Structure formats: structure tokens, C-alpha cells
Amino acid sequence: MAPRVFVAIRFIVFGVGGFLLMLGAWVFFLDRITSSYDRSIWPILLAPMTLVGAVLMLYGVGEWGRWAYLAVFLSIPLSMFLWFLPFYPQEKLAGVLAPAVVVVAAFLLTKRYYSRRNAQPAR
Image (cartoon, rainbow, N blue to C red):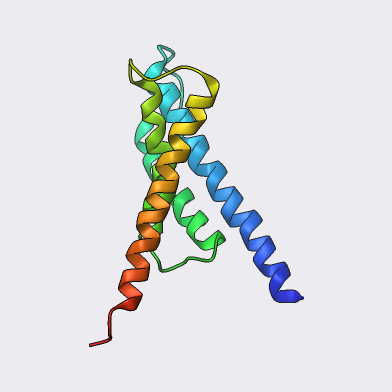
């Protein structure tokens, strides 16, 4: 019972906390580059905060040491840049759908990478 409680607490604290840190930093960054109001946090601090959030998520979901999964987590905020393309549809469903498709594609590619890597014979 204790290991399951630890896994649940680790997921909530590090997984969800890392996600909120990463997403919050990215929202502040997007606000900074799209707003004329110039009193928000210094943008150079937001990149390390995003990376720290992604690393916390990596630990929170139990994939520590599988660094390629950082691509999955970092694809979440990077795919939000699609919202600023002039031809991007502005409906609510499309706004959520594009980052979700990018994350699923990054996850499938990363999972395939690790399955091929584990299938190779040891040298």
C-alpha cells in the first residue's frame, strides 16, 4: 500500500506541479510577447522555468532517465505557437485540438524510439 501512496503523491506533487509550472511560465511568456504591457516577468527566466517544469513532470510520471520524453512534455507549450498563425482556426475545439495532436504524435514517436532501442541486441 505504501508504494502506491508514494506513486500517487509523486504524481500529484511533481507531475501536476511540474505541468502547472511549465504551463504558467509559458503563459507568462506568451503574454509578454503579445502584450504591450511591459511589467511582467523577465522572459529569459521563463525558459529555465519551463525546462524545470518538464523535468519535474518526467520524475512525476515515473520516467526519470528517459530523457526523450522531455520532447513530449515540451511539445505542449511549443505547440501553443500554432495559435498565433494567421490561418489557424479560432474555434475553441481547434484551439485545444492542435496541441493535443502534437503531444500525441510526440508521445508515439518517443515510445517507438524506446521500443526500438530496447529491442536491439546488447553489444
